[in-house]
Length: 297
Image (cartoon, rainbow, N blue to C red; front, side):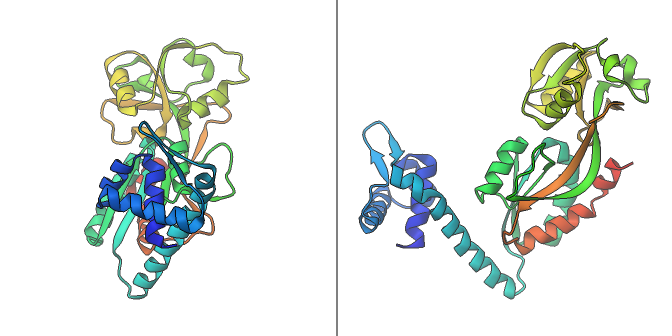
């Protein structure tokens, strides 16, 4: 069994399409099929069910998948460790980011790219749940996101800053001059909320779960830029972390006085996993980012 064959297997398992996998691997489809066949013969197990309509993992394929992923990851880490013996900061750094961390990310990314031009940055914006899952699958080296409601023993979450949920309105809104507001105050205004599953929405739902209060929810949106546009052009109120609104012109974030409004901004990495030198350097830059200090003012 060769690492190359395991890489081929993982790509086919991801795409469930031999043609697409061959394209991503820069090899011919016949070469890919031949290598998968050799792997199946060596294991004496069929790994994929193939027909004219679809490709599916067999039971043996499902069993091999996490072990193949871990084996390839261990080999890649071995290469990285040897490279770093030469004190070379090279390769690729894969970072997951939720939108609330955009300002922090921009500060650190610009500094990192200037100081380490040989490292290629790959930045993925998505929901916290998706990013954490990709971290667990070794697709990401670190994630910038708020601390989840339930801790995962496989993840280390290092606190960056303490934040809070706020009511966000445009600068012309009657609430814009307020220094703070309560959950009861929000009942008087129409709301456009982040979609269920986003961390700001989870925090809002947790805060209001036992309140017995009812709100006039006009829309639920899973795109922060669309939320911003809606709030800028209407009298609607949305709920976002204070850090999300940093550097957003025409918007005001009003702190909500209620239990459970706190949100902890964290860097998430795999527990007991090897961390690239580039990742350690990026984490250091994030810790010194000016954007972090802004969120604590």
